[in-house]
Image (cartoon, rainbow, N blue to C red; front, side):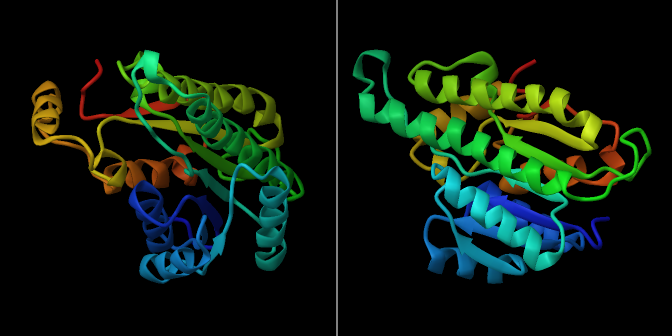
Length: 251
């Protein structure tokens, strides 16, 4: 499905990022994953069957650009980028600290933008056929939005704002990069059973399950499988979309 493709997954040491790296590698792609800690990134790469794990702080634009260029140079090209790196910290409106705003926006918004910019530059260097030809795209990018960014959530104002911005990075970049044969989409997970949601009480989890028509929390693999489809040639006519992966929580 992805044989011969080279993929980069940021924030790939755990949760959705790790599951995505594993899914892409399992489909035949050569995968490079990143994390803030180099040792953890290398360990995750080994667990996911990825080619390598590298340290990266996505808030550092220069570091992102250098790493993306390095991956493309080492492997001869870059076909797929999944901008997964992000943070989530809840706070009621009256308790939001300036530091929380700065950290969330610099990681989720600026970090995603840095990654998409660098990916687009690397993909544009590839020799691609006309964008309208099926299966000949210069590359595919997926960013991680959230249903919270689409619909809001009490106690998550900053996180919701950041993820709304991420969704619109995908929409805007898709319009700009389509003529270059680069597709850009977003996924918007609902309540997924990862480290980010481990702080939920059992009561909160039960409440979310009760609101979800499919009657369960999502798994990282649920999201990873959707990403694997979006970056494949089977999705060659899909761009600028924000795909909800929430078990029907928001209808």
